Every structure is written in C-alpha cells, then in structure tokens.
Image (cartoon, rainbow, N blue to C red; front, side, top):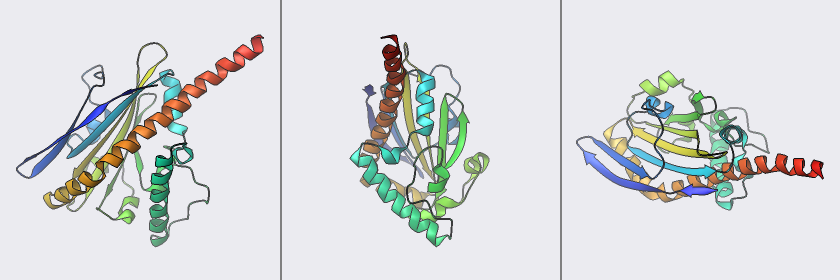
Length: 237
C-alpha cells in the first residue's frame, strides 16, 4: 500500500470567522461537481484530510470500507482510542436511558448510529458521509438524530457540526485511491474559539487515528483480493 501524505495548514482569522485549511498532494478529483461532503458542509473552520493508495479494485475497497470492524484492528492506537470512545458512549447511553450496547461490540460504518454518528449521505461505490451535531464536551448531545437536510440547515448557537467522508476512486489498474476528509464548523464565535483550542491539543492524535483507519481498510481490502487468487492457484495444482 502507498500512503499519500498530507499537511495540516495554518489557521486564518478574519472578522468573526476562522478557518483551518489542509493542503495535500492527492490527485484532483475528476469533474467540477462538489463531493457529498462539500454539499452538506460547504464552509468549515477545521479541515483535515488524508489519502492512501489501496492495492485492490474500487469495488473491493468500497465493500471493505463499509464492513471493516475498526474495534478489531491490529493497531494498538486504534484499539485504545476506540476503547476510550466506547466507554464514554456507554456512559452517555446510560444517562439517556438508551438500550445498552452488547458486551462484544463492532465499530463499523454499518452501526455508527450506536456511537452518536449518523450516515448523512452515500453515493454507492464512491462516497460515504457520516456526521453529527453536538455541544463541546457533551457526549449526550450526539444522540439527537437529524436528517441530512437538518444537518445542513442547523445553525443554533453553542454547537458544532462535524462531518467526515470516505471517497473511493479508481487509481490505475486494480488500484484505488481511498481519501478521508473531516470538516468541522462551529455555529458561533465563542464556540469557534473553544473549538480551535481543542483542535490545537488533539489534532496530532486525530491525524494519526485517521491514517491508521485508512491503513486498516487498505490492508483488509488487499487481503480480500489475495485470498481468492491463492485459492485459485491451489485448485490449479
């Protein structure tokens, strides 16, 4: 697998709006139409992105992306981060008197609602967008379900909107470019200032987690392609 590096851009402040740009070396997406993520959250205060070349066809990569269980990753970092997230989610669900999660949990794009996220949009085989609206340091606020239209129009003070997309694109022969982008936008100036302070403390860890997640998908997708080929060779002997 080949990783395409990214760089976190500088923060710019102008008037009541501050933005964080992220520049990267990824090949440009073909066509001029916006991604689903850009449609749902066209303006953002914080943007982070990363991409990886997967040694598997787009259809295999996309199928793997949707079902891979990040809680079972070989990455100690991912398991530790998701364990902390799971503990906070369990506490929030108890306070809200929601049904408890099973003892052995999965953390995949198929059950993100259990963890306070929503699937906002999907273009089958190409892009999935997940997101949430919350107040800073309030896990319980994540569990208010909203549609994509409600997410896009939401503008109540004291909250932030966060959305992330996984984009799958063909990249040469039997290879895929898997890109991940996170966009976060605060709904008022005070929340934006607090959001930038939190980002300054957590951005390095966030970038590491992002890269590990993409590597997990890339490794599993590559394995899925290798297994049928191995079986075919065994049968031919």
